[in-house]
Image (cartoon, rainbow, N blue to C red; front, side):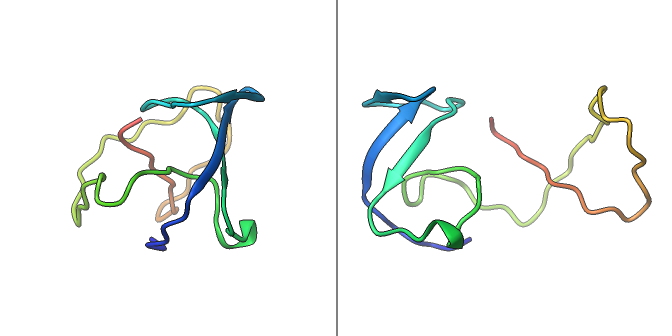
Length: 82
């Protein structure tokens, strides 16, 4: 978690400008004075709007079209709340 606050200059969905986005929308966000190399694709939220947790119990299933092998002790990327 970077804990960086920046001003949003503009937003777009499917290459069209929008004034508002909601939970679950896929959007591009242009932010003022932000070096793109310091961030990665993820979730944008207003400060203190997301709860923090130290413990999570999850049921994990293989995506049907994924044909690769999942080895023991593999690292997984888990997204929740979408």
